[in-house]
Amino acid sequence: MNKALSAVCLDLSPSLWSGRDQGAGTCKGLDVADIFDEVNEDLRAERAKQFALRYGWFVALLAALLVAAAVAWQAWHWHQARQVNDVATAYLGAMRGANGPAPTDGQPTPSRNAAMSEFDRLASTGPEGYRSLARLRGAALHASSGDLPGALAEWDRLSADTAADPLLRDLANLMWVQHQVDSGDPAAVEGRLQPLIVSGSPWRHLALENQAWLALRLGRTDQARDTLRQLAADPAAPDGVRGRANGLLARMGEPARAGGTPAAAFSTEPRG
Image (cartoon, rainbow, N blue to C red; front, side, top):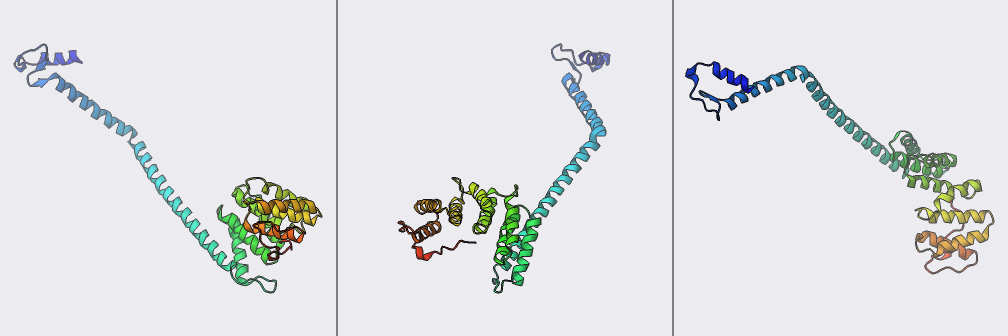
């Protein structure tokens, strides 16, 4: 490149020369560095033009796709938020219906019937979280309306739902046990209790209480008494559980333990 520029300068009329400085390398009015800059700018402009002609359509397409993706994401987010809002509204409406008057003749009231239907719908089509809560509430309504098989089926579905919160799955098992401890298959009841009585389970004390009831039902009085003593002496057990354990122990001939609630305050009838 230097030789080419030198040749250009040498071919010019001598009048163009302002003198030759071997250190500076200039033509009259022109610096060699300026010539290089102009050539480089021309080359960059030409390359940019060629790049735009070759790849401009691709850049425009990529920009359009990014804009479309952003719009789609916003639309999906809006749709999800609207769905959650609709589900929450339906759930609260069903809760209001469920809290209406209790059945007096063994038949659920129209508001409770509507609530059960809504809970059943949410349990089938609602998002996780609401689906589990709807199953629990729906099962409780079925049980209180005399439809125990329907309630047991809902608790079964929730306890088997691997996508549900483990805490709610265990609660479904506990509810199933509480409604089967008096008449259900003892092996099935005991099988559902075992995961609930392990140390660290939030349902441990309630599960142990039901285990004591099962032992009494099967005539295992000593086992029941040992479990009740454990509950009555456990400061971590809820007050209600300790009180019921003390009350039942008193009915079995043992004095109430300190901190317990008097036995007369509790019924010894199994809770269904």
